[in-house]
Image (cartoon, rainbow, N blue to C red; front, side, top):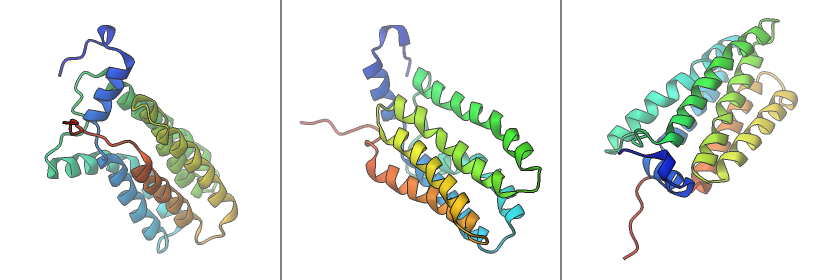
Length: 188
């Protein structure tokens, strides 16, 4: 699909973005974070936090596989500028991950897990804007606040799992609240 962004309205671009998107990314994110939350019950804080560094890297490939199994193509929007913006935001968040690791080097490994939970949630803000859906903004803000509260108030050894539970709850909310993605049936 070729998109001429200069001659296409923002509404048409957003509609195209929603049609090219699927719910595979939130499903993949929910599965990966739930797995980490369960594993965190049995692992040390340092090990669970190290695994959190790989969470974002696991979501996209899993989302791709989920889409392929359903006969879809993740972000099939091709040259849609909103899809490009969303993917560039993923890169931007990835570039900030070393800050989390540096900050946690002082002996608080849960800062890595907390940082990954918050940063990976921030991608929902540009996604929501591109899809013209307030769910993304609510997800990003509620997830960050919830993760900070879990970090501050849930005692060890449950802190890591509580942070992951907040992320999973944010995904459940988003899957229930976000506008439908993919091609919609026409009203006949």
